[in-house]
Length: 173
Image (cartoon, rainbow, N blue to C red; front, side, top):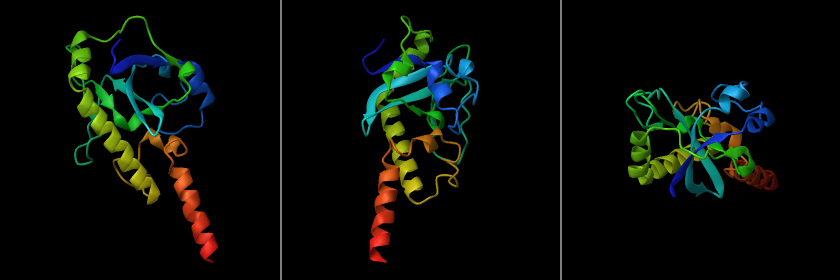
């Protein structure tokens, strides 16, 4: 384990309890979802725990902007963190920390050496998503159309802002 991040699993119960979520990896396959490695950054955004999936094949869509970070290994040269599919899990009982990290040391080193850059990129991705959602463009913007952040508008404060806008508009009428 590391003081900047942990490689964790998300328990099956989380996926079973959130079947209605959209744009999730391995949608409606909780057993498969719970075997996927997630990088649990020791950073919070608006008091939310951020988990980013480590994918064996990160597809970087050119022209969309930063949507992930490459974390290659000898066996998986296209592996990387996929910001589009990050999870926000504040109930830590859903997070399972294995006794031993089961990712290669080369990948651990990349995560360790690039923690601050990853943290900045994740924060920028989230802020960009929020900005897009507040303009009601999150399902149109190419960078965010496939984002799992569609499921976390309450946690990100988006609903609160939209409700306040709605209330302000109704009092003007």
